[in-house]
Image (cartoon, rainbow, N blue to C red; front, side):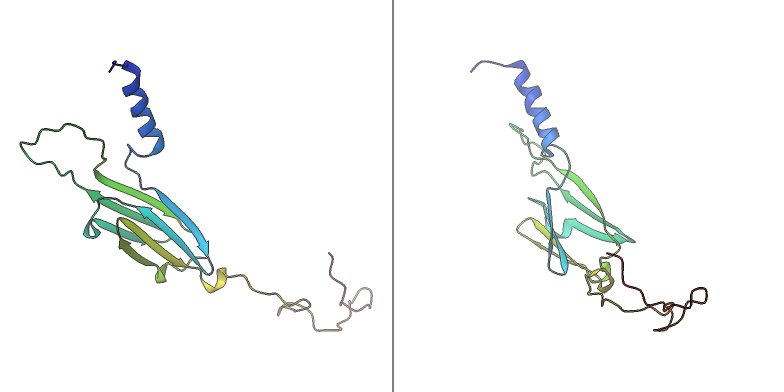
Length: 153
């Protein structure tokens, strides 16, 4: 096998750009019905080494993975990232962080974040008036005409 001095540099650049070599957590987030489902890959991390916190609208995930090597081991290849990993997610105000649910199974952290009632789509009745609206059929004092006008489309 020939030695290519640029292959090692290329491999390191690939790892850094893909997130594999860095201390990141691969993530997938989807909206499913009335909740957001977020999954983060944490291979080789134990459940007790995962910490999830919420402060205001910031969700923080921290995880730790220690190397398996012990004193006296001769390292032949070491491509697995270890140490502390962290990720912060900025959540919209329409999510109910008080009801956030976290589960950890098979190296995958699954977060379910319900959408608050105020953030859910709602039907608005056409012609509905707010309290500040004038009563039905009120007259405009300048023109004497009814204040009920068709909506602009």
